[in-house]
Length: 119
Image 1 (tube, rainbow, N blue to C red):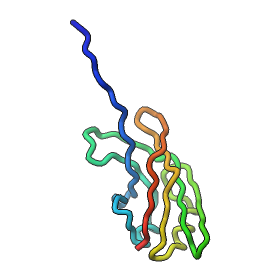
Image 2: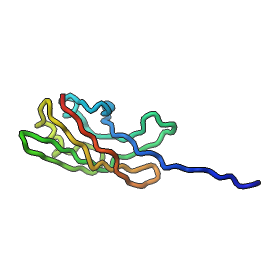
Image 3: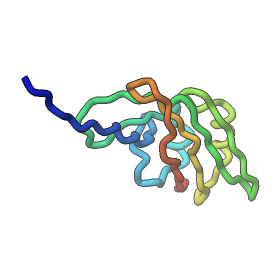
Image 4: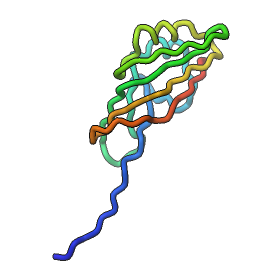
């Protein structure tokens, strides 16, 4: 049998979600924000069921003109991050960045940062 050529593409990066809901609209209630236990990364409208593991992320907020940022390893919101989130007020911005995920093949890659407005 003759050989057949295949084109192979990399899997696109996933999108960050909270376990409670999608964060794509970039607006979140303070009660939802402070209740969030962690973050998950998944593909929206993707043909294959692939699992991604969030291995690290930062949360940054500006409170009373002072910017604070806390990091965590894993997909759970740390106690330090919860403390920051409890200080935000309506109209504030929360930044989730330096998000690292483990792809199904075991490689670790960064995904897009997220900016949320507290409602």
